Image 1: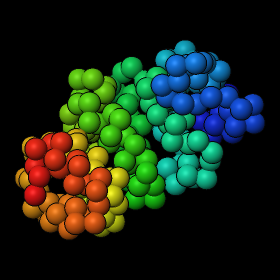
Image 2: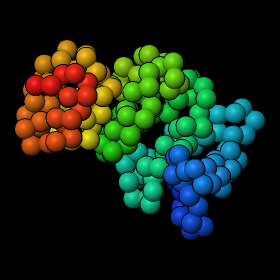
Image 3: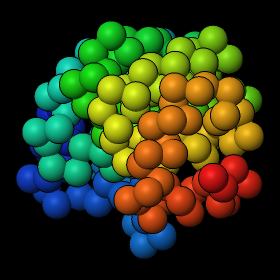
Image 4: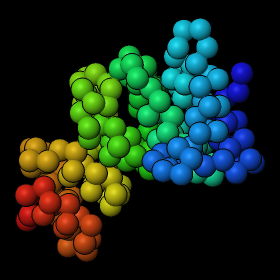
Length: 182
């Protein structure tokens, strides 16, 4: 059985589409290869993602789209929880992954993601900590959209956002859209 990293490399070699919302092919070949991971217990994609090094993902072509597609194939909250919990300890090695999961999965909420409220909150808190340390523009923007009117509850984070909004049109727009314009 292949690893998730091997499947990403195979997709690159064969020039498979891995775009999450491709309206032409639906990333069919890539999704079919992911389905081969499922196995008897149905959690093969989650197992493969848990075994994937968060930091090593960045070295792969189109890793972000591939992760987006793979996470989208997970239907069970317990499987998504296992993946995200396995990634939390090393999340600082891939801020773009933290941002991707926050924006495309955590932002939807526990009911629609699927994931438990506990893991959703753990991911948000980890992203807040990373954003405060790194001041990563896209992560800050995703936190604004994810937290909405709760963004002001964290004063330390809000100070970072206010400072970033001076130079970042993206941050200003996110604040305006979330009705928290400074």
